[in-house]
Image: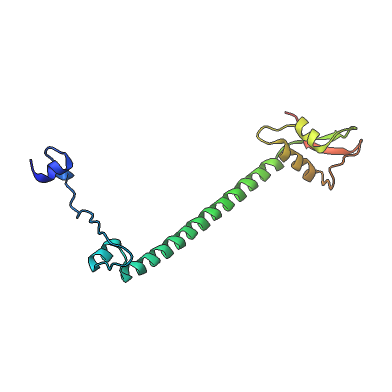
Length: 149
């Protein structure tokens, strides 16, 4: 058994022995000057600092590009979903309903539900389909609502 194997507590495989130099700790203080070897070990040569600034700049630019791409995909996806939903809502069959006292757009939307659409979406649909400018309905008023299936 070799010295390196004993150091790592292994019995046999030399693949476990590291091929890189071990870490060397240097003692010193604020008033002591460090050697050139110590500066290189700490990674503070002028070249390393310049490369570090370039690396930070590259990471920031790449992050901004990825964020812009994801935002663009989100906007495009939402626009596609909205257009498909509008197309589907426009194809819903309608029926005429006479407004009775106490009726509201929300109440009519919840009464005439369509599978796959929320009450809020149907209320918006009823408002747009009937060109309503206010949420107040007058008894006797005729409205188009989704047809019951």
